[in-house]
Image (tube, rainbow, N blue to C red; front, side, top):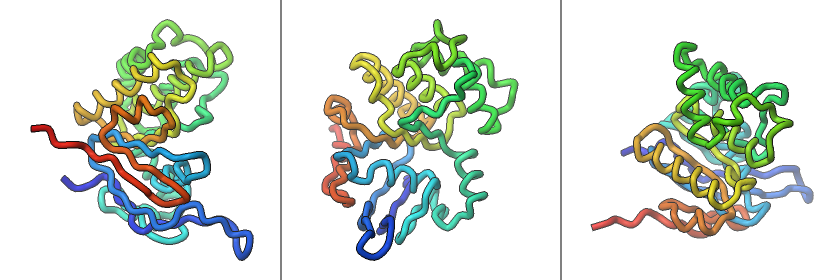
Length: 232
């Protein structure tokens, strides 16, 4: 099976001369379809930068990124926006919710942007809100929700269009342990059923322990990888 994402010799630096900061330095990795892959590393190690590059929100200084063999880092801004709309779900650390919209309306907004047929909206909204445990909060707006609840709305909005790839930056950071593991089990079930592929960042050692694909970033390089063990 061909990888859904391939990152080849990618570098990303900011600034010039003696003010140049090298954030990523020669990254090589592949993401298999229908897998949950995690990036771990200290703050400043380049995890979010790498997610942004894979999502077409930024471009590498050197190297190439392929999505289903298409060289996305060569895309124009318009092509990158269309690529995200058709293929990606993105969960930002800042959640990115529309403040005056209810939970349902925020999820619906994600479906509208992704071009999902209107006739499918109602079922998908109900289903994904239930997946993240917010059915009883569906009519609430952002200011009526806790940080953890807002994070779960962001997760539901990313899941609802059933994108080919979900990029999730610390998607369980605001959740208690029980809910965090519930969300990871949802991710694992979705990939097992071949509905999506998930790449996420996390600091949570408990979550890292139960994932099969973990890359460790240190000083802009991949220092180690935990790969799935074959079961006999």
